[in-house]
Amino acid sequence: MAKAKNSTNEFNGSRIEKLWAALNKYGIYTEDELQKAIQEMQPLNISCMVAPINNNNKKAN
Image 1: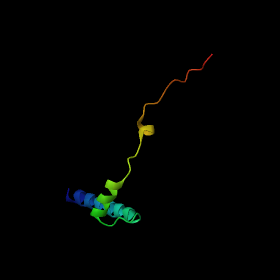
Image 2: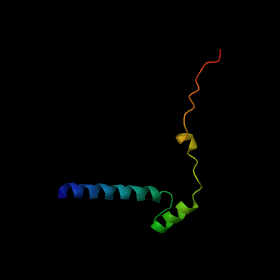
Image 3: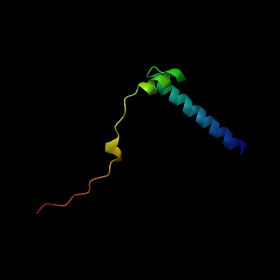
Image 4: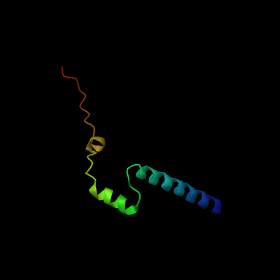
């Protein structure tokens, strides 16, 4: 079981490194810079992705 736990830690470490590399592309290098960027973000409207689908596909005769 120790092997599975270790591989999970390696996966998480690799994932964290990839996330920081992506953030670095936006000029974010520290947790403080990340928190500031999150606070300054504009709200994101995702209603078009979560709204119910209008299913009125009846043909008018």
